[in-house]
Amino acid sequence: MLLEALGSVLLGLALAWIAVRQLPDRLPPRRVVLTAGSLGALFGAYVTHAALGPGYTLAVLVGAAAIGAVLLSLLIRPSTRRLRRAFPF
Image (cartoon, rainbow, N blue to C red; front, side, top):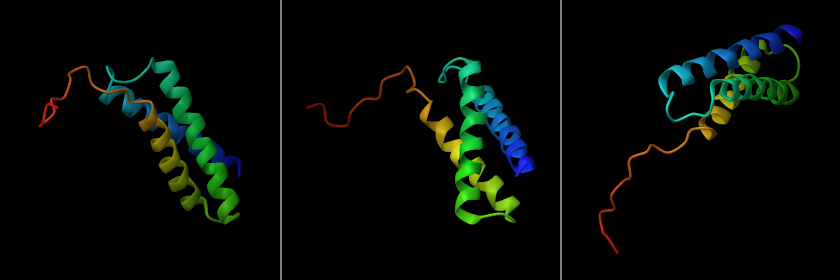
């Protein structure tokens, strides 16, 4: 369980670092993103481990990555340019 938690935190930090590198202008400050990524992956590992039970380390890490990525996607702000509507009414 300890290795799953440590692996999920490292996986969440890696996902957050990639997100900060790819979308620096559309995310909040780096500290917030790194914290949210690691906590989201840790929560994902907890939920997945509670659902599957012990012995499914790879599945727990996949669940941690999925929930961490979902949490990071919630932090993305819209781009600064406005979209035009096809029908302006």
